Each structure stands twice: as C-alpha cells, then as structure tokens.
Length: 267
Length: 296
Image 1 (tube, each protein chain N blue to C red):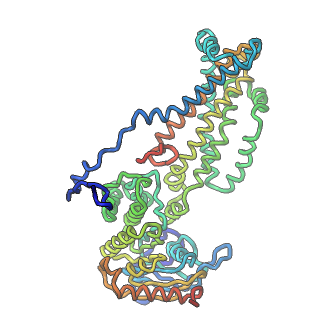
Image 2: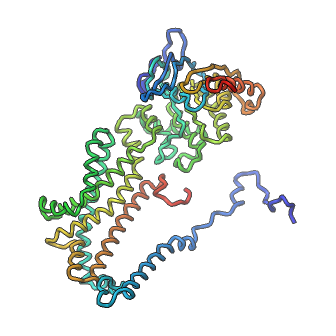
Image 3: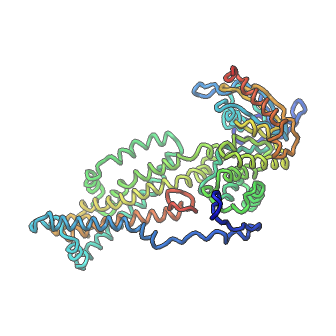
C-alpha cells in the first residue's frame, strides 16, 4: 500500500497493517474546491482486489471528484487515500481519443508515454484491441467510429497497461441503451477474466446493479455515502439477469436509498 | 395488387453474410453532373464580373475617361500579350515572390516558436502577447520607410516587412491551437506521467495543426501583400511588382496596371491554395475542416 500523493506515483502491493490486501482505501477523504465549493464530505470505504464497486448518485454529487481523488488528479482536502496497485487504469467519460491517431496508435499511446519499446507495445495494443472486439478497425480514425466503438477503443487503451485497479467515470453515459448493455456484458467478461478491482461511477441504477459486487449510493452535493449495498448475484451474470424479479428488488433498494437522500426525501 | 401494409416484393435474404453484397447496388460514381454543379457557381460569378467590367468600360465611362477601366480584351492585349510588357511584370513578380516566400518562411518558423514558448508558461504569454498585438496594429505603411532608413533599402528589408505583416496570425492561431487540447486528454497525459515535451509533441502540437494551417493560410496572403507594399518604397534597382504598379499608374498605362494587379492577386490566390493543399495532405485524414463533406 502506498498513499497517492501525485499522479502516476508507483504503488506497491504490500500486506497492510490489518493483514488485508486492499486494492483501494479512502479514509475520511473530503474535498473543497479552490472556489470554496464543498464537493465531498469526508468519506471512508475500501475496495478489495476483485471487487467492482459502483458509485451511484445524482449529477454533481461529487462522484467524478471521488475518482479524480483516487487517481491523484486532484488533492484531497482531508483524509488519506491508499492505492495498492502498480498500475491504475482510468476510463474517462469521453473517449478522449486523439483524433489524429488511428485506433491502433491511440491504443499504443500509454505504452509510448511509459517508454515501452515499439514491438512490445504493438503486441499489447493488438491484444487489447482483440479483447474489446475492435479487431479489423485498427487503422480507422476516431471520426469514422460510432460512439460505442470509440468507447471500446478508450477501454482498450486503458487495458494495455494491465491495471490492477480500474477507475471508470461514467464511461457508457453517452451511448445508447442497446450499446450500453452490450458494453456492460463485455466489461463483465473482461472483469472476470482479469479480476481487477474497480470503482465504477454511473448515474444508472440498472448499470450499477448489473455490474457491481457492491453499490455505494451517494447524496446530492455536498456528496457523502448514504448506503453501501451488497449485490448478491454471482458472476458470470447473464444478460437476462436484468429482467429477473430478484434484480428488480436490488435496483428497487438502490432507488429507495437515492430517494431517501436529503434532497429527495419527501416524496 | 399487394396487401395494403406491404412495401413491395423484397428479395429473399441469404443466410450467409458473404452473399449479401450483391443485394444492394454499389454507390453511384461521382458523375459529370456533380462536377458541373461544383464548377458552375464560381463560373457564373466570373461571367458576371466580366460582364460588369464591360458595362462600366463601355456603358458608364466616356471614351475620354475609359483609361480608368479599359475593357478586358485591351488589358489582355496590352498587358499579357505584349511580351515586352508582360516579361517586365513577370520579372517584378519573381522579385516580389522571393521576398514574400522568404518572409513567409521566417514568419512561420518564428511565429510557431514564439507561440510554443507562450504556451509553456503564462508569464511568457503575458510578457509577449501585448506586443504581438501592437505589432499587428502598427500601420505597416508608416513604418516601411523607417525600416528602409534603418536597415537600408535592400532585399533584407523587404523580407522584414513581410515578416512583420505575416507574423501575428501565425502566433495567435498556433497559440490558440496549442491551448485548445481537451481537458480529459490532458488528464490522461498527467495520469501517465507525461512531461512537458511529451505533452507538447504528442498532444498539443498535433492537435494544433489545423489551427496552425488556418494561420498560415492567412499569413501566406498577407506576406504577398507585404511584399507588394514594400515594393512601393524600395524603388532602387530592379523593380518588384509593387514598384511596377506605382510606375504604371504614374505613367497612366492602365492596361499594364490592371495586368500587374491581376498577376499580383493571382499570385496571392496561388499561395493561399498551395497552403490549403499542404493542409489537406497533413491534416485532411482526420480533421473535418480540411476535407470535403463526403464520408470517409
């Protein structure tokens, strides 16, 4: 474990004091922006390796801030953040592809930034492109891709460095529902194959319940964690699970937790 | 008669995707009609301008004042087809073009370098930008003689005039491009520990190329103007295009005057088109502004 102080600080996967191999731990972490806005009240939680923790909350509740804190892109006002991973993968809300690079060269970018020799990073890119099902589109430029395919390319880029901890910032928020479900299915397949730990920020209750082992429900700004819900379904989860009555009960509980939050309390 | 809700007979769709291609005919080739449709509007405008020219020459100007705008055929005859005159114009063009090209080249290198420096630190931007604006607002006509007195009425001074007039659009457009990289892309580079240079060469500079070319296109035209304006003042030695224009108007030789003006503007159009062509080659593959509307 080591505390994240700056972006890209390499972490070590050590056994912690309480003999537990934690992938990510927030202890009393809060954030007030420079302009005085209180974005996040002190929150504490941790994620174990192989745990996919979804964070659900209304827009502007500090979900993205939480991820930026975890990645070290912004500094916490109080508290400590510990990341037990050599590599942290970050998948942004937008695909953030470089439009002047082909899919292949976009996926190779992180290897380039980390100084991985060309043959190796090419092989890493090929594998990641295959893993997200973009084989055959390597030489296309981003402008020729659909929204869903851009997101796949963005995911492939993050996969190249084989991160142990993944941070997803509403990655499928802008794609249509059909594509989103398909991408969710594929993400779960990757999750099962690689067993990384992940924080997955979303404003979709269904998406959170379908993907996550645990769901953290957040309140309106200033954000805080209202509930920490276990999702009882084992993996692999079949797409039909979404239409199961048991699934509806879980989403119902998440929905109730959201409504019980301070802003939405009296119905 | 088909059933009311039927759209007509649809062919049986084979099970194998390999057999699907022939079901839909290939997209039609770019036909001659479409080429005409693209070429016609500018041709119509050209015809209208020539028509208006004739109208003014023959309709509005009395024969004694026709020297103000001689009819097109007279300009062609006197300016372009009389070799002694036209060769003089071409020699002038060669000199002016040399000054414009040298000035444009120096302005490109200098402008991009200054913009890169400004993009690296707000303090550098703040210390240079106001003076770059001043440079742009100085009336160039007023300082050309000063440059002449200070540096001599030589080729070097002509180039300096071109640099002064062409520099500003390159600086501003390059700087704008360098600073307009997406926030998320910057975050990505930060996350993976990219330093100043990696960020500049892999993110900011390639992303700025479309803006840089916008600046270069403006400046290409401006450096031609700079060279022609410079010519007005650098009258010693071999005359440039601007000096010839000055000479023809003093001597009341309208045919040659109009021919020289047309040559000067055609040269400006040519440089503009040339930069556009290079832009198309460099960023046309990925950037919207540099390519046609048609899909990839």
